[in-house]
Image 1 (cartoon, one colour):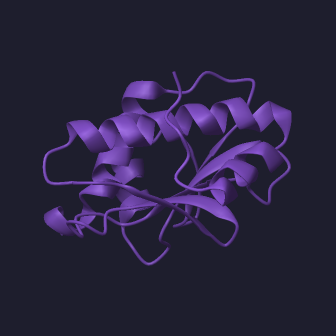
Image 2 (cartoon, one colour):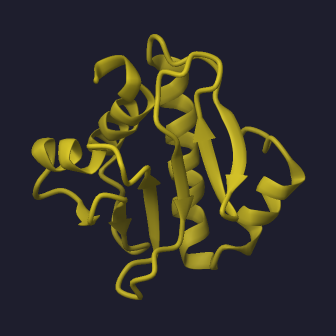
Length: 136
């Protein structure tokens, strides 16, 4: 069962995504919420909209850098997990998973809807983002 959205606006944002991407974005949302619950020091997750995209932050603990879910500019990819571009997160992700993900500079992991989500690797990347300020 899917967790309820924090606001009607977040629900509307997910509803507005193209069908091909929506299920993958919802799966990524589930991973974010699950990783947050299972990762020590993260605390409660705040689900809001930033730039019209679902965003996940750690205001209770300040442990992490926000994660956003959305559609990339590149039409070669269907969905993306965005991180703050002034962090070293994508560089860290690439150090661990150079052949698993496609990266958009310092800001995103890019995905195709017709490909399986590399769940274990993505969970690790989400955990790194949600604990970014604890590990700097």
